[in-house]
Image (cartoon, rainbow, N blue to C red):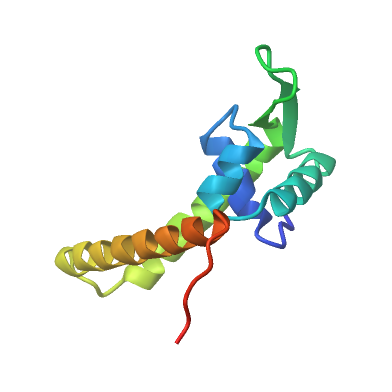
Length: 126
């Protein structure tokens, strides 16, 4: 399985959120619509996902993992679980909880900044 350019993240999101649309994908993965569009096309060309036209909005396409996509998703999950065990080895449950709190704060800060810039705002630099 060769999913370069972070395509695995798109596949995981689509597998875990069947029927999602590209706009949701862009917002949640914090990437621009053009990047999402190119990534969807690559996944589609590799038969990992399929697009289905919305029954209620003819301009909207829903994304679903194919059987091959779901098989690859399982491999990605196995790799994630294995890697998580390795990188967290030696940490106590309390250490892991503290780490999660810190990472949640970092993610929240990053999301605020991403949304600010995505919405066309300019940041003030020193």
